[in-house]
Length: 359
Image (cartoon, rainbow, N blue to C red; front, side):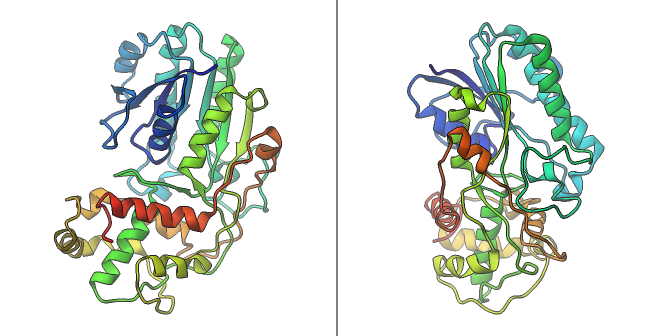
């Protein structure tokens, strides 16, 4: 059936993967929406728009009568990304951004059918408390403030008033992919950390905390799930956890990372990357010059992803298993999967080919 899909957040990890995936599918017309133009090649129509600007949204989106589907991957994060997850302003801004998009779009669209909405493991309170594993979608809503609940309530209430269209909510965990300036970019953070350690003549030591089980969700897998949900009756008005299909323990994954970068693996050396790495920007500039990389300052490439990396690697905390059950998604008909180690190494390779990381 296909249609016209508007992908909000086209410069983010998930949005970029969605643009590339839908761009390659027959029958789909794509509108890529973001504040700045994506720096990757695409065939889609591009719409420059700041979703915090309600007047601009009303003016530009009221003309998109042809849109039938939305992939909402736009996200506002605070500078301290982890602390920002509990910040009321962050929640209000994300709520307003979705409303600013959907209100004029729903009023204009002649045949609107479906929206895919992103949540994540924070739906289960991963940033607030430990939770039982595996987390399941049928659990009652975790009682903490979160913009997920604001956006979900808006979608449900708007659908109840307007009708005629469906939604699907996806909850990934530790999304891997690449987008410049992304505040949750574990691939770029790990790659830059490895490059700097090598430039300093140091082994690639593991900087995180104690071992614990978690999962990855490759942005390309999520993009394929968006395309499935856009047309699958079993995805209508459902919430799904989504992950690659295996588990991740970073200490067990570390040897593969070390091998890929051709480095020695020293003993674990717990330290905060958010505290240590920004001061090494001059080392990064030497790496750029030595290897002929794109001229991207360390702060522009990584930014607050150092903070996110500390969180994911368990620095300074006693984490527990953070595993999401994906049984419901498989039973609904989406059984795609990826090997997390292979996916992570593949992303390192992609960044090397793009001259973002040194070979």
